[in-house]
Amino acid sequence: MSFERKKKRALAIMESKKMWRSNYAPPLLRALWKLGLKIPPLPFASFWQVTLIMGFGFGLVWGLVMWFFVWQGMGVQPSSAIFRSIFGGILCGVMTAAFHWWRKKANNLPDWKNL
Image (cartoon, rainbow, N blue to C red):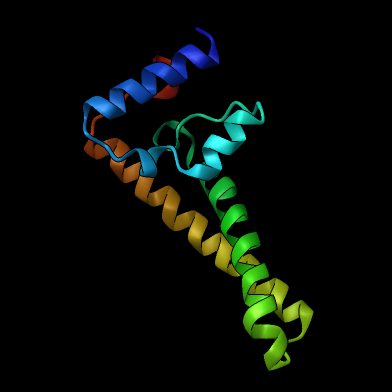
């Protein structure tokens, strides 16, 4: 089955289970789909895929916002700001991946390869 058909099937299953679209297909993921990346909806993606995608997105945006609006004015060193952004991204990514793993189990969703 093609990626697009699997994605449509997965979205239909999650919609039928009354899952929130903003949780399983957030704007970042929809943007990546438009760029042509073949990433499954978050509850169907692997734990590490979710960690990487969401952690990188959060760490980058949060780190830049914090740098320009808070840390730079406080005199935080760039290396410290980068470390904080990476740590924040990893923490956010792992927590998001754990949430989606739990939602997959709670909604009894099939594995991506079984769609």
